[in-house]
Each structure stands twice: as structure tokens, then as C-alpha cells.
Image (tube, rainbow, N blue to C red; front, side, top):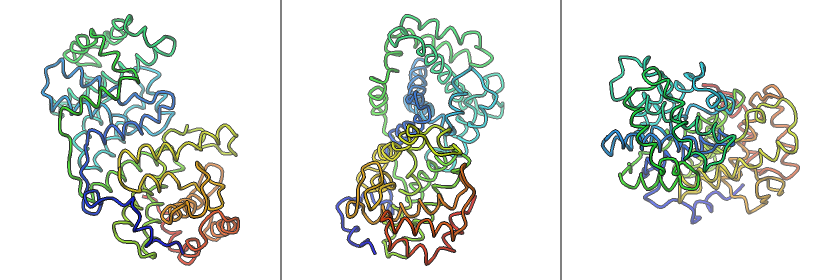
Length: 432
């Protein structure tokens, strides 16, 4: 059996101030930025849309004379506005035209996700209506929420116009064509967009810096400089930390109908199995969090690869190989000074060195990662996938036994799983 107690003594444990069981001090602005970078993976070839929309919202709000706290609110709202978009197909629809009849679906989904994480719940109403025409916004909404939602809509559509322009032109040409880009939206003022918001956009767009800051080279610096002018730090309780993990995992699992509940069920499996191994409550909860978020990097994987009914081509397989490192980047930023990112990023390593992305083997793979790997494989085999139906528990055990024989997964952890396979199978196939 892997020595989990020895792992408890490693130096990568969080300090008492970052123990998720006691709570965690988090900068919500930076957390929103990190979540947005993960969401921007969905764009595949355009990985900064959410951050640009947030910055555009802030700059327009500045020209409206809104207070600093309000400007920061719309910056964060703009950054996380697409939290209901997990599918690359949906992303493509949203950038193809000014309006799309299916846009409301991701607005509803995003609002639902945000309501699940208390510190972001105040943005839910804005995100719910960020594709609603100005003339059709519900009169039951308070005037401020109506403006905020429409501001995100305006900033979003401007960035789409900018992106479509750059498909055939060079970055530096934006400055010369700024009036034309803004002018593309002029016919929709009063119907799609509030006149006062559009007037502020026209004023902001006259400055060179408005456009230059949207380039990837300058974007993050502009955002961080802006965030630094207001204190966004909050102390998250343990339940809030898990709610953040569950919110992100729901975004990831929504990417494909074949991965619904995968992350949540892997987390449940890891938590149950770790209970049989004598891990401390803190360690078990960190492992559950890592399991919830282990596939966040798959947001970058195109839908057609995840949902392919046959074997992946070599090129498609190479695309899949990058998702653990994409996960590591996001989780290192969200949960620094914890082993969460390491466990999540290495869940495709194999004990015989045949895994990825590093090809680690044996003692290089710590006990928690081994456990997460076993749980991930077990749940994936129990779940219906595009190329096969759900497997029965006996078939799953038979496949994993062959993996043990090949030296790929930990034999002791597999023995524990097998001894509890009926109960763990009922967890793995649970929906809702």
C-alpha cells in the first residue's frame, strides 16, 4: 500500500494560513482572472476574449464617471461573462454574428454556475442577461443591473467585431480603423445597446491606449494594474472553497454530454477511497478538490475530439496530451502553496513510465496522484462515451486488472477499489 502518511509530511503541504479546512484568503479579482483564462481556452485560437471584454467594460465605465468599486465590479463581470460556455461549437456561434438565437442558453447556464459560488453570486443577474437586447431587458431588473448587463453585451460585441476584423488584417491596423469598428455597432444603438453606454464607448475608443491594451502583449498587465487599485481579498470558508471547485468542475463537465458529472464523480470516488486509507480530513478534502478540477485543461480540447466515435488520429492524440499542463497552469494560480495542481496535472502518469505528459514512473508518482489516477480510470470506464456504452462493473475490473499486470496503476489501490467495487460503481454511475 502506498505510504500516505509519509506523503502527509512532505513540504508541499499548505501552511496553516492556506489550509482549506480552516479557510483561505483569496483575491477575487485574481481568481476571476484565473477562471477567465481557463474559460478562454474554449476559444482555442482566441484565448483572451473574456479578459478583453472585462477591460473594455472597465474603460467604458471610467468614461461614464462610475465609482471605482463599480468599475471593478463590471471588470470582473466582463471577465467571467462566458462562464456558461464550455463548448467550442457554442464559442464559434457566438463570434460568427452579432446575435445568435441560442445565446440565451449559455447565459442561463452561467448564471446558474455563479449562484453556486457565493462570492460570485452577485454577478449572476448580469451574466443571465448579457445577451439580451437593451429594449428587451426585463423591467423587473433594477436599473443598475440593466446597465451592467448591457455594458457586458456591448463590450462583448465590440470585441467580436475586433476579432473578426483581425482575421484578415494586422494588429496595428486596428488604430486606423477604430472608428469603423465602433461604427459597425451604431445602427443598433437604442435597440441592442443603451445610448449612454455607446456614447461612452465612442469617447473611450478615441484613445490609442484603449485598443493597444487589448493586445495580448499588454492585456494582463493592464488588468493587474487596474485590479491593484482596489482590495478584492476575501476570506473563503471551507465550504466556499469547495463551491468554487464544484463551479469550475461543472463548467468543465458541461463541455460534452459524455463528460457530464465526470469530475464530480471522480471527486466522490477519491474522497470515499481516501476514507479507507487513513488520510487526514484536510488531505482528503484537498484530494477531492484536485479531483474536481483535474480536467480543467480539457476546456481547450475541441469538442470534435472529445466526442469522436472512433480512435483518435495521431494529431488529435497530440492535442489531448496537453490538457494536464493546461490544468496545472490554472490550478497553480488558483491554489498556490498546495499540492492540488501537482496531483491534478499528473493523473495520466503511469507507474511503468508509459503515461503523460512527463513519462514519470515508480516513486516519482506520489500516493495521492496514484489514487486520483485509479479513480479517474474507474469512472471513465463506468461512464458512457461516444465510442462505447457504459461498461458493467465486472468488465471495468477486468480491464483495470490488465493495467495492473502491465505495471500501469498501483496494485494495492486497485485491490482496495476491487474490494469495494459494488459501492464505488454505484457512485461512479450516479447522475445529478
